[in-house]
Length: 264
Image (cartoon, rainbow, N blue to C red; front, side):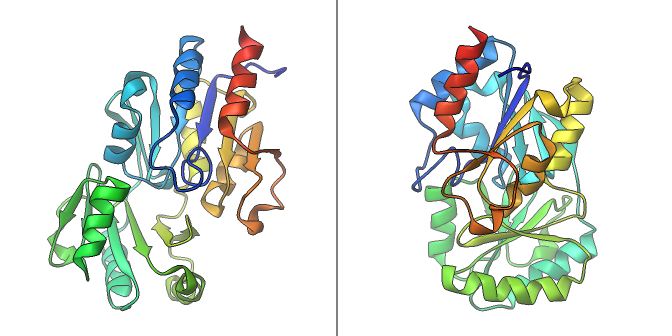
């Protein structure tokens, strides 16, 4: 690397976590530890909640910055660095739009928990025991008293594109809708994405885009990859991402090791 690397952001599902891995590899943790000792800030950049990311990276927790909820929330050393909130009326409208579709389950993000109005117990079990979220079960979205950060929906793979096209027409430019996985998509406030979050982090930490590396594979990573000076797109990316100008890689760990070796 010719330019000094000061920050490395990586998407998780499909990027650092491949083939449905539940946790990042010990190799990745060792590399993150070594990089932070060299003064590099590592940023898990995900649609996941803070509780989830905090537990996944607890071995390096004090040194890692968390870009959560696709850029709507950033935590560093357990303090909020950035928070973007939904207009409450719009958020509630989105929640009910998802709940009214019999093939969709809603997930509503607060600062430190997610709220669900489950149609099946299996969905709650999936979130708590597979995704490992902090989950609060409610009877209706109106019960939520804190600001809503993001509204997501979980749906069968073969229905995702159809329902996403329908929801896109319904929101009519009032918020963003991004696909974040085979079965997930997220509504977010306008201007809240991984790219704008990295821009805000850079301004606060004095880090230029050219000093940032980012890894991603899906549409919710596009803004991040287009913002940083050193973007990496996974070989097994969403085909819609193939127009993004970026280096390609098979494993994040391989590039992290190259970056570290360049610093030694």
